[in-house]
Image 1 (spheres, one colour):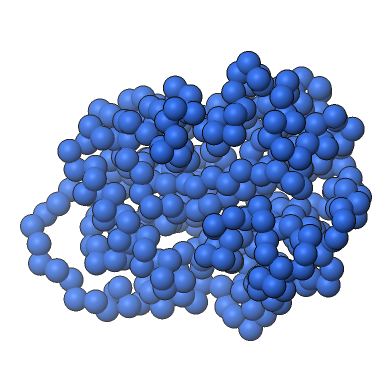
Image 2: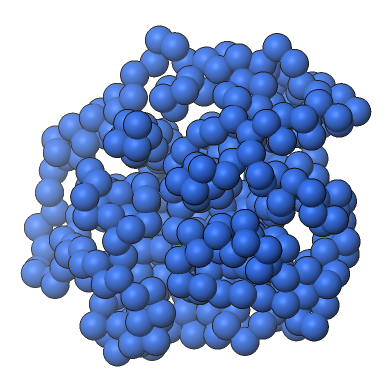
Length: 364
């Protein structure tokens, strides 16, 4: 569940993109770009930012890309944000957050009986999304706190950090020690027959909020791996895939990547997956694009690894409550109202962009 933000120039990736039939050209940050035949989000990001990590482009064009981010229709207009996340060179980060905070402060408060604060739980070391060292506790934690004061909500809350993700769903939510966990991937619960035991449990024992973030999970191999040329998920038959513990594999299961067709390794730390790939212990490392970039930069091995430009899965993150919590669905409805208003006002994007900008500066 860990994401980290970073940017690097991969020599091997650049060579791979040049070899594609049509490579996007003339893309620049702080502009708009018209998609050409053969473009991919990866090739556009490579040209504009020097990195295959296209999460920032996806964030800025969520409504246009959410339906099918793996297939870009020619003629589609995309916003290419500035390097710091601003949508245009003359816009200002944090402006929407400030305006919405002032509006909320000026709104009349409702008279109501005392209600106990909502108890959120998250975990540290999930940069830049959840960590006590970051402003507001990280992007996802800020979203949770903000949602409690948007969409007509005016509810107190408490935020704690328990650095054992599995304890959130095994103990903390089911027993009522906490009300909401920040945050989890949602399986496709319409395909229970394709899901593994963990994903089925998530579908049947927990309730999810509206999506608070969407991210690409990339497939990363050594540059000389036979799996580097895969163009369908079936091409990964026989592969050893690493995905860290507590990162669900439901996105892979619905693509048919289940044992014994493939085998899995689940270390606790994403960086361990990166090292296992470099050591030849696994064939693929599948996780968020930001995490991959940061991991191999830390290991000084960006030039040894290539993401597959043709295959990716897209994951949504959500706030989570236990179905055993008698007020759980009320809390989800409350959070959904806040999320909806944040999306409509643009505050959601401002929280994401300012959070990523803060983390990028800390990482320099």
